[in-house]
View 1 (spheres, rainbow, N blue to C red):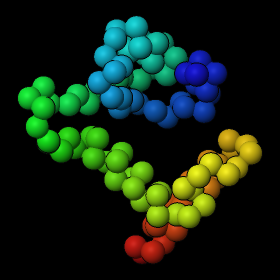
View 2 (view 1 turned 180 degrees about the horizontal axis):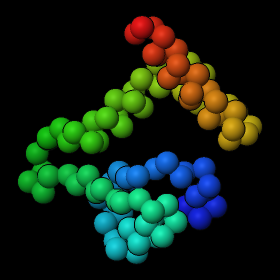
View 3 (view 1 turned 180 degrees about the vertical axis):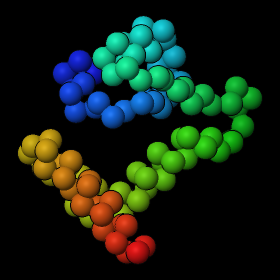
View 4 (view 1 turned 60 degrees about the vertical axis):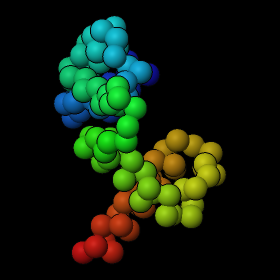
Length: 98
């Protein structure tokens, strides 16, 4: 996936991933294809709830997208159409806050 889409991801400098991607092979592949670093957001080992700042940004953004009726289910046939709907949803969010 990284190799196929590296032309579209040239501006990516850092990739934030879940604890399942801690392997050195994944980090080396990201660095080879994107020339970017990998940041792993690990959960606390004590099994108590703690808000992680990096994960909170991603989860908050997805919750904002859940408010858009058209994005609650993947209705688009092409990936580009789906991508444009996400961009429009964030644009509407920014315009409402402006």
